[in-house]
Image (cartoon, rainbow, N blue to C red; front, side, top):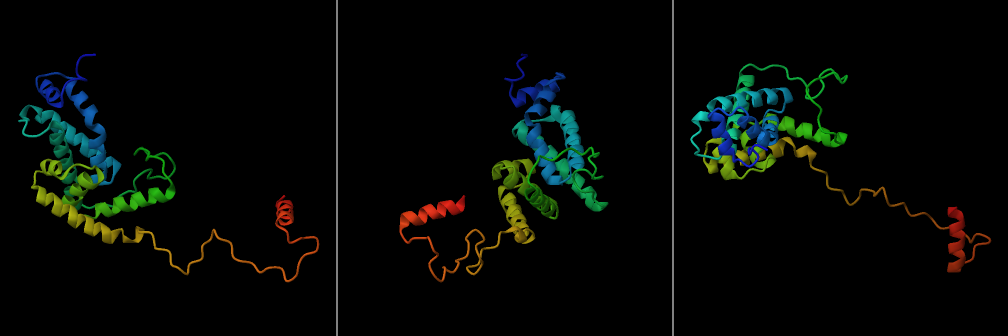
Length: 231
């Protein structure tokens, strides 16, 4: 053990700036999962997210020596990743292309875009619809919603990541949620109507018009005959 596991993020970043070749790799290892999740949910495409994350890490790698410590290192890293994602979204909007479906574009298992976690078909379809709805939001609202509602960062932290006031984050989230509520309204489960039949409850059948021979009216006899019928 070389002590990197116990080093703080700031110590690792400073060690990297001082020439430690392994310090930045350790810093990335600590935060890669959340950085990847932010990139993927912001862009909605695995290849785009991977490219944006790579661009962001190269930027962070080169700019480490200029980090002033005004915020936490993880906030600084997230800001660089979000900006890389937003730059890609803006470029994509300026030069629109026909998007490929996320996953295996050939549909034959030969794709190289990675495998989504296994999930029931209905859940996977819902996640895809939500991702598509997120992609329709303005980029600023999308970034705020991903960080606050999807990743669970506090509003104050998101404000530092995005470089805006907390009130701006709240406003963007509110507008984004309102848009999503309209776009995803069809996913809300319909309330059952009182007149709807309940499938699990069998209907009431008419009784026999007259007693069946051999079947007594006593409770013990009825239970024995019923048990025999069941077998």
